[in-house]
Image 1: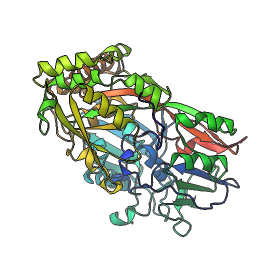
Image 2: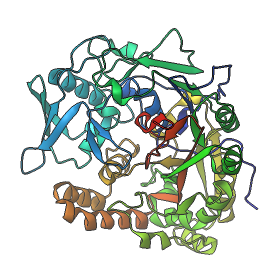
Image 3: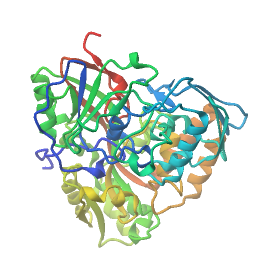
Length: 508
């Protein structure tokens, strides 16, 4: 009864889904090939300034122009990039030394130095962007010499090196004004934005950076990122050769394979409800854990998995990624679909007659899920009122604390990063600053624990969060991408789309 024709696709990144432009792209671009890689993108770029951008689909706009200090490879391992090596040089893991690559220049020829890198990191942390908390544990930076950067932490941060593979690690050119970075990137990456060939909102054209230190690592002379927010338009663009590769959705898989396209898959985000108002600040009922647990019992995640994403994923009730230290298969049995149990818990909490729950909605982000959630919560007495959001609202409905809960999609394979952003009192994705003493205690212990000691603590943390029902996950979805015969593409685990490093010409 919940099967609906899919019209807009599914969410595939922690922070990209709020900025859907409604633009379908299109145009009569020349076919891909001849030294050009063309990628179909689900969203338009919000900002070329890493300090105001995010992960997920935005990375394919940033990676051409910005190298990161450390690179995350397609196995999820840390690799050298702008930093040739890094290590903690103290026993408390609060002093990280990075040795920068010599001879690196920005696209205008400005040399990269440790002092410039330090200033870029400081700017990122102060910008109050979507990922600014990535450097929250940093106290200061020391540029020991041109190629030695020391990062001094106020407290250990097990996710710091991982964060340096993301926008925080993208070093911006100090010769470019901050306001200019929003529209034109200025980094040390292998490509530069060709402003003359670019049509904003349609196609962004990147050509080789003549000052790049390692051009042989990038086989394409040009990378075009085309905005194709419509799922059908993306698939057709790959089928006709207008783009080499694009995000795909499960209902399109058979058509793509029938057209001779390659389909690649990698485990992706968990999708479900973020229950933000854990202390009942705006919606009193949510301050009771029994109410949050009732929401978990009331939603049939397995049915949503089968009907919305055609089984392309796996069941989950936890916010941590499968295969990581915090993930525990046993927790997935915590909330079987049980509307009667949900009603009992609501009655125990004093809400036998239910309550009203306001949530944001968008036209392109999981539209098939909204009526299912609305119906299933309604069946136990919770009236869901959706408030439609425009693309111009950006991240505000999710980070501003206006709504007590929302449907969302989150992707990360680094437990400390997830815990810092989602669980800590000052985490960017805990906008109402809910505080839980047990969470705070476990995180303080994890921060100073050895790798071996961290795993049981992470599992204890995950179990507590599941029990407190801060979220209502539905499943972990598989990320699909379709590509044509001219390229080979390696999927990137726990990333919405492959990194630009994962593309190469077929047969090369």
